[in-house]
Length: 475
Image (cartoon, rainbow, N blue to C red; front, side, top):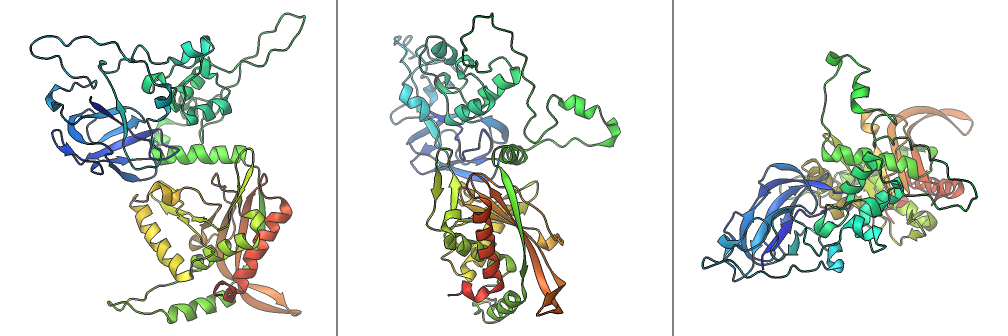
């Protein structure tokens, strides 16, 4: 039986991907573990491995194709013993040369399989074994989303589609699915939302009066886009045509706009600012860098930056204030035993936030070398999803740009983010007399669902204590 190869979901936020390159060609034998293709997601370029064996019979989406929706058919593998030349684009074998193939009843869709077509973040292609069905056709036994809802049956939808529908008030029962077996996926919900015709009905209220017509809901603003109710053409109408250049949104910018808009709407932010003296840290940094061993090429084994100390201090602070080492999980709070600290890395058109795992346990030199590797691979878009997902907090450092103070937006599901400004000489009062010290301003953005004011203050105070007494990071 032919095996359909579907565009995989390589991260929880991925809805479309670019098929950058095929590493196998039609007719090539395929073994489990072979790399089939390179897929560009909103965050990285991933190598995707095969999980079945056979022969690559048909490539349906050529390399270089952009914005291929998750779960779209991109290739077909002929299973062992099948003739690759007999496989059609829809995944069905051609009729035998001595006559038409004997018709077989179309199979009923397996409801449990509807949710198994994608493996987010797994690095493997998604497959679906199919019987005879013309390309683009819906098997007669497959569940249709609208029909299911109208008959009171189960509505088949992806978890992401359900979450978006809940947030936007879209009735899944009235949405027509375009995914495998009629499953509702995220783009279906977004299309239904845009049409304005599928708002979830309000709970019925017993009343003797005739129901009043509901006022039309206002149009929601697109994530990161224009004010509610304004179309792209209306926004452009405010400006002379020769006054601007249109820059199309790539997947990364769309994801950043969407996630950070959601973060500001959902996570109640509050901000805590402290000034940290750096004199002791700068002296220790100079001593440690001077004592670094040399490799065979004569280069230092490590070179610590101020940011390395910030990451380590944040990791230790989280474990010293364990109630703050937590994230919001809708119906509960998850507290962690070790600290996972993300670090914002700017790249062209966006940013990555790779996560230093167990930052509280790692040495400064280990953190430094990890960050150098992460930064290099982030700029080449070679990070794996598991390297930039998760984390409890993040560090965003704009000190190298001379920024003295700023506030940062929390990156869900994290519960805080530390905005680090530039170190500078300032005059302060010490022992009743003016003194010049090097000071760095840091601002902690906190999710009030997880951290109350006093808890956030305790966390940033622990961080300040470690920065100003850095020897505590070495023991």
